[in-house]
Image (cartoon, rainbow, N blue to C red; front, side, top):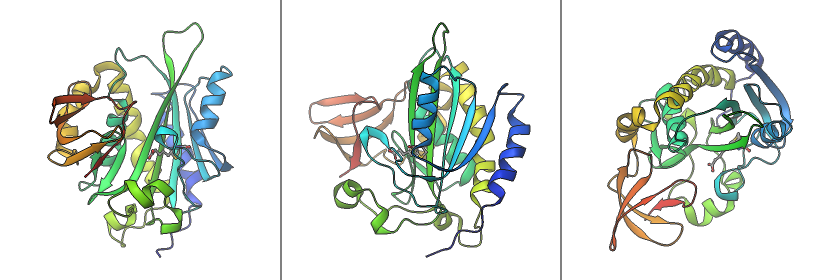
Length: 271
Ligand code: BTN
């Protein structure tokens, strides 16, 4: 097992990121918590209570991390970077946001990282990270408060830490860690990883708000890990993944014809 370097720098990086991002996100706060149930849960609760300022919440440990479709997200202290970015947003079309987030992270981290529609970062068909996007209504404002949760494995998760359904049925391969992707000579601290991904993430989310998924579609296609693979949808349908459409829906050629799957409703895995 690789031992992650000390991340005392998490707070230092949080401070310099706050300085760098405050112009783009007026009112921004960046908090690093030693322990929280889930950074997404916390920001969603705050939003429902009317706290809708831009916030980055980083957890050193999450006790009840959540993934998509009601799954748990497991990570142990120092082996993963777990954070959520919350901000008011008013895109004309929300579809494709989680794809843009994944693309942004991949571009900031490594050329070999790929995207498994709709929300996983992949390396050699192994999951390195996941994204959970949730939104809350903001009273009397046109925007919604979006909470973008990111979980990135730094070290390779041990089999005991795999989510049960992924260990047993869903994942074709064991999850991977960013240190495998980077090579063991590059053991970035969690603060350094945050420093690499956050400015690009803020820039890309704001661009998504103005220009939608269309602006990112080509770049997503270049990192799309599923195109050309046979896939099984969580509703049992099977087919050939044929890339994403202009709204970020996954196109699948099935025996019944081409279908387009939207991210909120269906999971997908390679056959
Ligand atoms: C998935 O793979 O289904 C998405 C995983 C998202 C995990 C991150 S960790 C930070 C944030 N807080 C959570 O509870 N979940 C997200």
